[in-house]
Every structure is written in structure tokens, then in C-alpha cells.
Image (tube, rainbow, N blue to C red; front, top):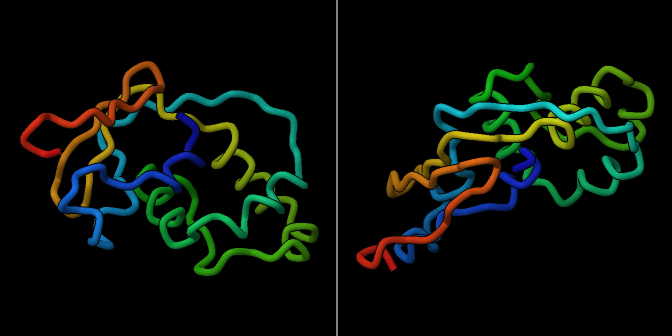
Length: 127
């Protein structure tokens, strides 16, 4: 599961739908893998406006990536800063969670990630 995907996932427990603490899901005991993908600046430029930057900063820091700036960089800033572009490319497109758990900050429910696939099926008592 690409780290980019974590920016779009929230807890599936019904009681968490109205809570802002259920997003982002927090990685726990995750095994990360890196794939080499050719740089695609246009993709990064198009993805950035759709990303919840604060959630990305939280996820990146929890996984031990270099700190990101407090605000999302603009396209002009990325064109000038090759290092930031490279770091974002690596973080969003090349890094994947292969094993581990995603934990809701609201209810604490843990979603298992196995072979890169998160299991969002809930037990009956949480549906």
C-alpha cells in the first residue's frame, strides 16, 4: 500500500465517522518497502492540491522520514527545490507499507496490513 493511500483512508468504525481524530490512520510496527519509479513531476504537482498536508506531515514523522515543511510547497517552489521534489516523490510514490497495522486515533481499532493490503473488514460488534 503506497503511503499516498494513507492520506485518503479513515477509520471504518461507524462511531468514528464524525470524529476528526479518526484521520489519518497511524502506522504501527510497519515494514516499509521501496520501489524505484521514474520521477514524474507533473504527477506530484497534480497530487499536492488533493493531499491533506497536515496528515502527510504526521504520517511522515511517525515513519521516521525527514521533516516536511509546515505548509505544502507550491509548484514553483518544487521546480526550484530538487531535493524537496525528490523527497516527496520517494515518500508518496516509491514507499509502500508491506506489513504492519494502521491504528485509528479515535477508537484505537487496528487494521492489519498484510502483503501490502489493508484489511478494513470490521468485526460485527463494530459495524
